[in-house]
Image (cartoon, rainbow, N blue to C red):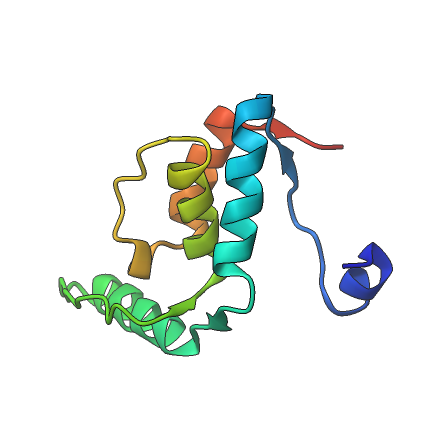
Length: 113
């Protein structure tokens, strides 16, 4: 993807770099191929919103993931951490938020300028 096309419609909030040994690069390409074309999981966003809204109201709402073949950005980031970087992400992938993922990325990545 051309960075100019990406920046027309998106804003980069934070960017991190990860060092990968050569033996992981093949695995990374397989990861890209595996998830390429996966639909965006808007339904997951509404579930996360419901859980967070209930939490603010003092209720502990527990929903299960739907196991669908859709992803949201933080879920894809968590999968990258687990499958490529081999970092244990102890969150439910269907409900992981950027706030949950950020400390993991900060601990293992180098912030790009």
